[in-house]
Image (cartoon, rainbow, N blue to C red; front, top):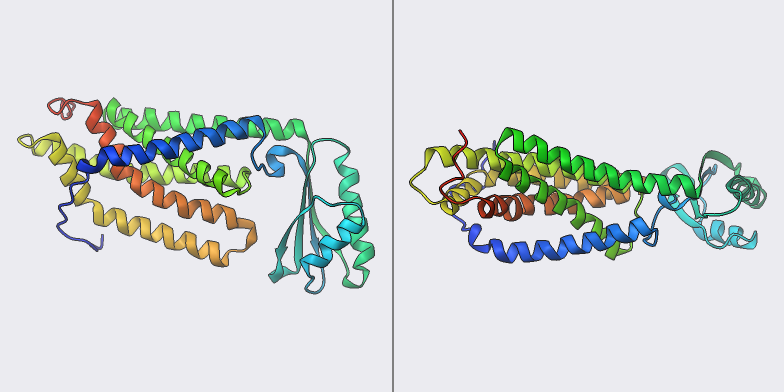
Length: 304
């Protein structure tokens, strides 16, 4: 692995209480967001709230303002429009928990076909999700995140020690809740694509944390004369270059997706950008300090 930074001696553990305070705020914010999602009062996508989505293709570029005006004149005033200019497409989403969603889709198609008859309007796809299905998807998404977190606890506890499993679980849960909370205060739409990003972030965070834990375990066995805080600090510094290179690779890829990947994966790539930053931070300032605080210095290396 390329060493961008060599022989660092940063005292990370001396800052652990400040970092844990910041993490507590982010986690609480995530809990608030999760509670609002469970209640159905957050800015939910049609995946969770119910509604209809229609993707229309034109044979030439079309101004979003003209599409919105045509829909408003036809009696549809609460539509969310997303432009896909490279393909001359417009994605129209309407959150609606009651009524016949099929009729709403047909109404949208009829209005645009009549208004833009000269542009050869073609319906690419339609998606209709009722309120009961949306509610079930919302509950299933929360369960999926909890099950994934529990699986991480079991895996890391089996591979290392139970306290390491707890540290990895808390760090991963922290990352998921932090990204969810940041999306909530930003007013971004919470949908299945975000859930996919959260589960991806959980996997990335675990991978980074396990690398740090591996080095801590090795050093705890080899450097028994040093205190646990010293060993944890040395371990984090030894893998710091690897962590930066890995995080920077994923970060730049996510930025490229955000800038050039199109509107469809815009929120996914934004969540990944935030998640990489938070995940790298948590591997150093959340997972390792939790392991340090859960075990007495003389018992951290007890398991061989």
